[in-house]
Image (cartoon, rainbow, N blue to C red; front, side):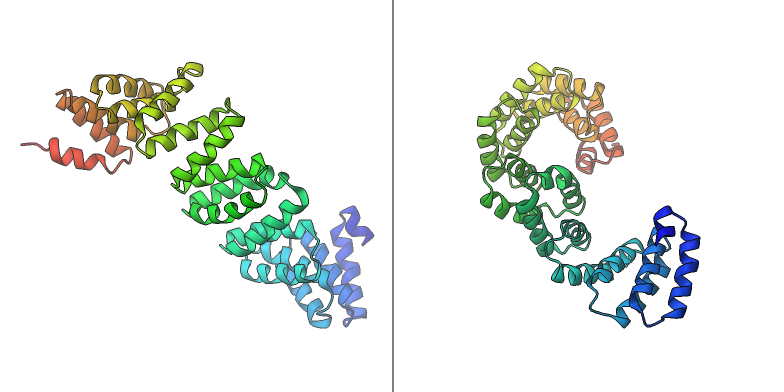
Length: 313
């Protein structure tokens, strides 16, 4: 153990090999060698040692946590999940283990367990769990197109802790990405009443209004934001799309052109919109060029416009 603490793993393994040979029925010798192998990142061999230790003494709870780590590192996630559950069944107040299980349950889409650990951790460390892990959680649910599931987790958390700005703002972002714009907007209005200068929340407000087809209100929000950041390429595009919905073709062309030049984050959608604006101004050639560019950038809706108006006669 002293050799392990010094990082002299080779010496530690030699000593532990001797210990296992001298007392092969002593589970602690196997556990200790397994831990050293974890430190050496020899996780496969560590699993073998922990398996033997558990066979000899299935009641040493700590061994399940060690084996969880080895299984996790070898991507045996279901086995790891079983071990962390076994460990937490005995050691219910281990914050580290709850964080680990929360992360693993997310990976395995075990959302009930994820919710259990999130609630437990929030009761212990408060908003820190949201500030530390919230972005990672939202990215996971976005990537897997499961934001509605995340909203179902956060809704009860918000109901229990309605005074938490961190929970409320995380819930707002999740509702937005889950396309639940009406309840998202209700919470946004509450939050903006207390925090009117939060640019990110104001942006969510404008986008929610847009998707609810409340175009004039959305345009008002984007205009307000553009006063402070007049060259923001995404805001330029947002405002241009509002003008497009209002059938202000010349102005939409102008603002979407500005956004494309400034390199907004959704150029395919901007080219599509500008093509529509130009088509309605009688500029079919330019419109076709925009729709072709939009389609090349991945906007599938552009094909409908190309097929309808830009096929060679």
